[in-house]
Amino acid sequence: MCEAPSHDEALNLLRRVGCSEKVIEHASFVSDVALEIASRIEHNGGKVNMTLVEIGGLLHDIGRSKTHGIRHGVVGGQIAREKNLPDSLVRIIETHVGAGIPRGEAEKLNLPSKDYLQTSLEEKIVAYADKITKDRRRTSFEEAAHDLAMNLGDNHPAVERFRRLHQEISTMMGSDLS
Image (cartoon, rainbow, N blue to C red; front, side, top):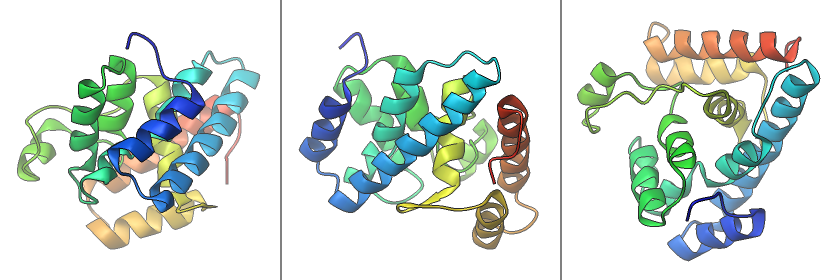
């Protein structure tokens, strides 16, 4: 597949690979939040591929069809490649975990040795939308940062990466999303 699937095709793909309805509902909510963020960035003069944000939000957790652990981004990337999805979607799926994972941390987590940091605006938007979403509920940045710190420790580098991502997204929107 050379282009991104449609909204309905993405939802059907999630079902075909075995994602639960709870994961699909979460993914739909993340997609909506990501589109809202992207719209605010565009309103503030940014250029965003809205289709990539929408479908990336829907498919970001496709790896949860096989695992709910830290590897779900890597597994999701493998599934996306097998389904011949565009590299831009594979990258969103692989880099949404945490606030991105640099190569050194990936190796310590027994993930394939590569950088899982977001580079494109669309990757950053979907990762951020996922971080400020719990199931089908939007949280504040503060709550999401607190949860991340509670899970990983206050001094974990992912907490600082998330703070920087929040600042970058807020600046591009022209205001704080909270």
